[in-house]
Length: 125
Image 1 (cartoon, one colour):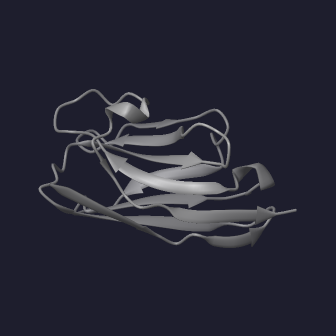
Image 2: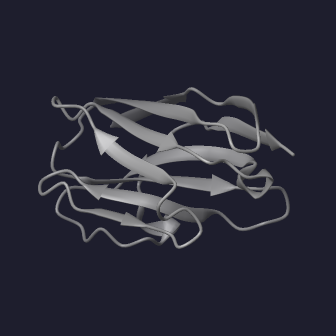
């Protein structure tokens, strides 16, 4: 089993920044695809950023491109999401997730086998 635990959420004014962390432990595969998702009340879970653990290739949703950066630490056991120029519409519960080893790094939430509990981000105008 793989365990993921997010931290770093909070409340910030529009234009501010936050950095989310996701500690990954257990039977994790360092080359696995990992991602950040968010879900606002009444909306579907949205994939916002993904990273391939082996190559480091990153993917972003259009809504966060240029403002958010996903990264891994050198040990590949902590996933980060640097969020800059935050907007009220970024308000949501944010989750990190990991796919099973060797799976394609696509954005569908259903393809991610392991999930954290989430951390709330609230952006006020």
